[in-house]
Length: 260
Image 1 (tube, rainbow, N blue to C red):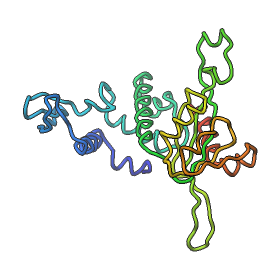
Image 2 (image 1 turned 90 degrees about the horizontal axis):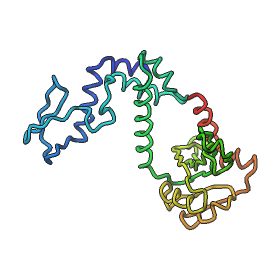
Image 3 (image 1 turned 90 degrees about the vertical axis):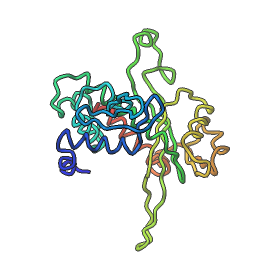
C-alpha cells in the first residue's frame, strides 16, 4: 500500500477504529466467564458480555492496551515502519506524527517491533537456505567497560545467526535463471557453540531443506538436521555468490541500525 492508498483507506480515526474492530471480530473476543457472546457499545468502544455484563474495551488484550495514543496514530506508525526499507528512529517517528512527547512514541514502536518479531517466529524456512553469522554493535554496560570485556563475550558485540531462503528461479520464456530471496530469519545467539547453532536450525529451518554455510566448526552437526548441508571455505567469492543474501541482509541491517 502506498501513502495515497493509505490516506484514502485510513483518513481519520473512525476509519481506523472500524478496521481494527473488523479484524478483532475475526479473531473473536472471550470473556473471563468463558462466554463469547457480546453486545457492542459504540459510544464506549467496548464489548459487553451477554452473560455476566462485564465490559472489555476494544484495545484490551491487544498491542494498543494501556496506550492513550489514537488509533490513527498507531495506524500511521505501522504504515511508516512497514512501508520503508530504511530505519525509523523514535525521534523521527515523533516528528512525523507531530507528537509532543517522546516516551509514548518509543513505547509504541517497541511494542510494534516485538509483535513483528513474534509474527516472524511462526515461519519456518524451507528449500535452499543460506546461513551465516553477523556481529552487531550494541551498548555495553558500565561494568563491562570497566572490566574491559571484548570479543564474543562482550555485550558490545552481539552475535546473530542470519538465514535467507533463496531459490533459483527460471524464466519460462527466456530460460534464464536468477536467484531471489523469499524470507529472512535472524536469531540472537546466546550460545556460540554448535549446540546453540543446532537449536537455531531446528527452530527455524525445515528438515527437507538444503543449507549452505561456510566451514565454521559451529556448523558441524547441521548435516544431521537437514536433508543436505553444503559448506564452502569463507572467501570474497563465497560472500558474493553462495552466501550473497545473508551478507546483503547483514549489511542493510547494520545501516538500518545506524539510522536508528
